[in-house]
Image (tube, rainbow, N blue to C red):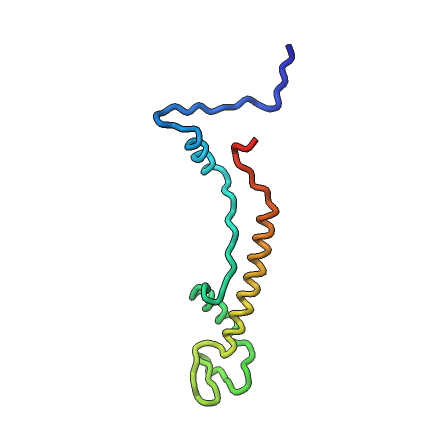
Length: 122
């Protein structure tokens, strides 16, 4: 008689009341590495206040359009109107969203290429 082993014999024994196979499998799956969730694309409306502040801090000293100057705390136009954000802030936000969405797309494509298997798939 020949005995072939493909790997070590291992098994778990669960003892208790009301234990069902699917419930135990679900419980064991929670202990395994979870499948990463796809990132959602950013939109201007979904940016957090912290993200907007970060954009402002990084870009507030960028060149100003004609007719504006920075007094050290606020942006002032030639009518004397003061603003707390750079006059091109909308453009900066659009650029940030585009860059972030490029990164989101790259992440999601890499995620799709990864193979995620269930613990109990043959």
